[in-house]
Amino acid sequence: MSDEEADFAWGEAEKDLMAGIDTSVPHSARIWNYWLGGKDNFPVDRLAGDDYIQTFPGILDVARLTRQFLIRAVNYLAGDAGIRQFLDVGTGLPTVDNTHEVAQRVAPEARIVYVDNDPLVLAHAQALLTGTAQGATDYIDADMREPATILEAAERTLDLTRPVALTFMGVLGHITDDGEAQSVVRGMMEGLPSGSFLALADGADDITPEFEAAQRMYDEGGSVPYKLRSQHQIVQFFAGLELLEPGIVPVPQWRPEVTPITPPPGVQPLAGIGRKP
Image 1: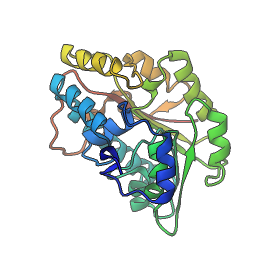
Image 2: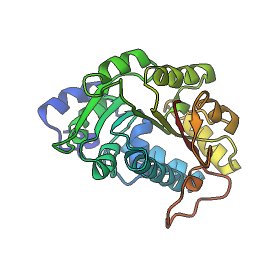
Image 3: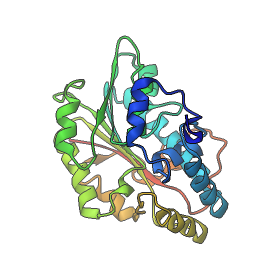
Image 4: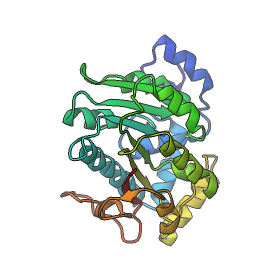
């Protein structure tokens, strides 16, 4: 086993999937996993993550704040909104309080489908597929640019005649064309029934010079570039939906709870939840 693989306890199936993983280039899902304290990353990812932190230490707060919004959003959707079906697009690597864990704590019968197309995430899919006996979890190996393919596969687990909560947490920036990104969200929501929800968090372009320098270094370092968008552009993802209060706001301001994290000024991803009429 190579040094890069030493952190993993691979089974035979996972070793076969490793053939599709380039461990010489940093990957956003693995860097994010590293920032959140996970162990499913390689030396090249930790190096890229540390370089980013050195330029802009606040990225650790950004990662944690986004995760906290996911937890609050899923708690609301499974609790107050009564949603029992979740479609998590661009899920990334499992850490703590994944969507199915949060939803099934509230409603053990909840059904969750994860979507990603990264070989390492696929190799860890088994970790995602350990929900409650009353509910269900599934994993779709698909590109988020293919809404029709995702929706067709999701029907193995979800009843698309009943409301679904669709989540995009910090992933739409990987689609750098604004029209294409909006088309992805619109295509997914059009395939879901009335009463469904969109929960979204993404990077805003109102950032500090340090954040801008770190992001530029990241984009030029071999990882898939990530586009930061204006508040107006992020609001457009919710076109045709009924925005829940307090609207599209910095993530710590969306129905906040007590948290030990103090976000750096001006460096806060934007988030919101909308309901399909």
